[in-house]
Image 1 (tube, rainbow, N blue to C red):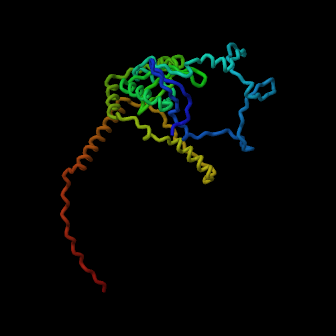
Image 2: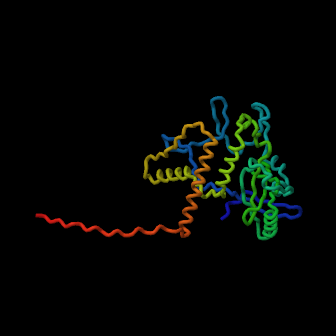
Image 3: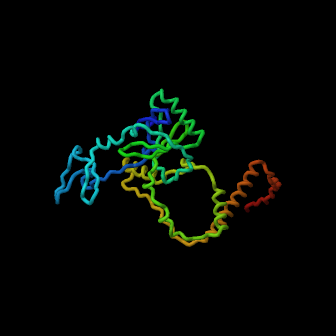
Length: 299
């Protein structure tokens, strides 16, 4: 069952206009949401919207709250919602697919949040499938812009499974330059060490399978909450794993040891496979005749 639609509008490729709806591709159903509780009374803590005048705090109604931009310290210019709505124009309802790029051209830092795009109405199915299949065959990502949540976003649209997926992309000014973070790294390992690390990585290459990596902490939190609700345990503690003290290691030695263990594992796997495939078995030892035991009598 698809989640509730978050946005509806059109995808446009030249003269082709396809009505679509947007749905979150991320589920938060397994998450545990906590509220702040006033322990003496057991009542939830409220967060009030209001203004302060000296020592006096006055709560204000929702219809008196407007958006404001602080252009100087303590000075705001007020913006009405209808003024923002007038700026959206057609962009709020249509995503123009004007540029198509290879997936690898998009820096991973720019991906923010994934959504599923679905055709809106039976009449949209054919155009939707055409766009999905064309993007799948070319391996391209369509770049466009859309307005949602009161702001304009860059989006990337790509084929996914039998349909289309849309990813919100960040603007360039939202991505921090990496150089200041890495400029102090001065190590210069030997080519041999790097090659050994590459071989180890290649030997452990596989597929990305997130289902094999359980959320153990999340599961523990849910179990803790359930026990509290069921009153099976008045107090439950989750033991924290202590961090091992940092120690200086010899990278080359560690890589060699890792490769040796990998090699030993391959040898064991090969031996086990040969045994499964009918490798010669050792002849059973000849049965030993039981020795006669003298009968003892009691006088």
